[in-house]
Amino acid sequence: MAINSYVDEATAAGRPVAEGRPVSEGRPVSEGRSVGQERLVALRGATTVDADEADAVIERTRELLSALLERNAVEHDQLVSIIFTSTRDLRSAFPALAARELGLGDVPLLCAGELDVIGGNPKTIRVLIHCYSGLPRATLRHVYLHDAKHLRDDLPE
Image (cartoon, rainbow, N blue to C red):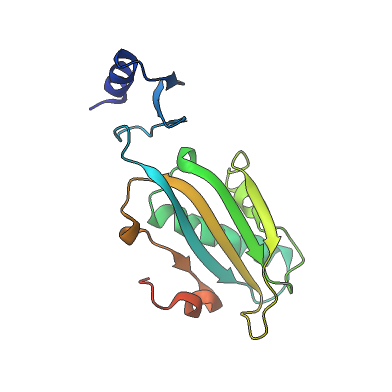
């Protein structure tokens, strides 16, 4: 069914339409997906850097975000917000800068400090992405890269 059919169906049923797309629960529905199929989900991931250098923080964060979005088939319009944390030993750059460089500057981004736990993983950047997805929770692919892989070794690659 084409997106126009969803718009026609939504309009006929008295449901709101925004920017030529039907709105479900206050948000546009992605093209090719029927109203109500998507729901809010959260994707997790982490990566590490070898040294506290701005270029390293940005590059590894960009790699992590790209992998999370690609593996879960998340498109820009499905993103709600992204929260980044980094360990106390990373001070050279905000991880959110990588998201802006990927064209995600209009998505609400927040950086925060990770808890400074004894024995915690050093030089680590974590991310929590809130987005809409039609994938079942069991098939969501969280991503852990570099020296962060062991943080969730129960997850498939």
